[in-house]
Structure formats: C-alpha cells, structure tokens
Image: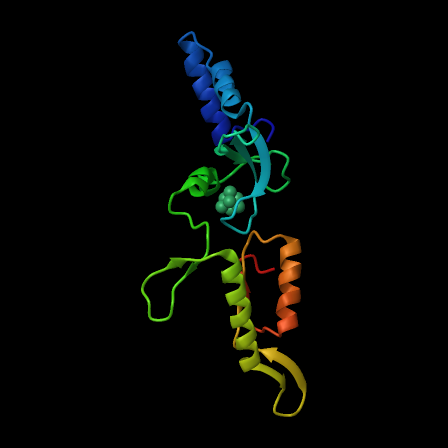
Length: 193
Ligand code: SF4
C-alpha cells in the first residue's frame, strides 16, 4: 500500500502528531506498557474458535512456571507469524481473553436426565462412556446394510455429525474415519470441510 494511508495508520499518525504538537512523544511509553504487560509470560499458539477464517493467536500466560502460583492468562493477540491473519484479529477475536476467562464458560460436561429440567456436572469418563453406549445403541437400531434392491449401502441416517470450524485437519481426518466407519450420512460443518 505504498503511498496510501489506511485507517489504522491514519489514527496512529494523528495520535503521534497530536502528542508531538503538545511536546510529548507517547510512542516509547506505549511500547513500554505493552512490553511490561507480556514480560515474563509463557506464549502458547492457538486458533480463534469463532469462525472459519481460523486466525492464529498467541496466548500469554503468567505464573505457570512458578510453584504455588495459579497460571493466569493476561493477554491474547493475533499471531504475527500466521500467514492467515498476520497478527490481526477482528473485534470478536480481539475479545478472546474475556471469552476464555468468563465465569459462564463451560469447562466440564453436563448431563440432563430424561424429564429433568436440571443440568448436572458429570465426569469426563462417565460422559464418554455414555456417549459411546448411546452411539452404539443408535447405530444398532438405525444401520442399513442394503437397500430395497439388495445393493450394499452401509448407511446410518439416524445419527448426525457436526464439525467445528477450528477443528484441525487431523481432527477432521479422524472424524471422517469415525463417520465413514459408522456409516453416518448427515454431516454438517461450519467450515464445510
Ligand atoms: S479473529 Fe475474527 S476473523 Fe479471525 S477467526 Fe476469529 S472471529 Fe474469525
């Protein structure tokens, strides 16, 4: 964009001009604040979970190397090394820290018993065992090996699968194996992979 000024550049230049006009240059101070904010953090690369663009993010965590200190996420930003977003994030991605730290975020499986209006926390092992049991039972009931003309279809149309936009290639590969192994026909994915 040689010779052109985008919105971010314009705002940055305007702020710098205003500060200079007042006799201050705030840029070193702003850089120092950012440096202090992420100094001593551990950086973990991840992917924004919101949409199929799949922007890469860097999660800055403080305290996970010290004893008796609970790790805390202090900052999440776009990954400048990513060829997808090159360090940028849209407003949804820029609010990721609030999403991760929200006290309303589900962190364990919940079960609602038939007829109940209450969700009850259950252990992961119990949830996975129950899911496996229900999938097996549903497949046994709905699997069709051949159509009305005797042609092999190995089809299961009574169970559906939904994929997420930030599932990795490896996860989608395994989901595909599981899906085709079970014979599942209904399939949807936000990313349409
Ligand atoms: S930062 Fe925005 S555009 Fe990028 S994956 Fe997240 S929601 Fe999508």
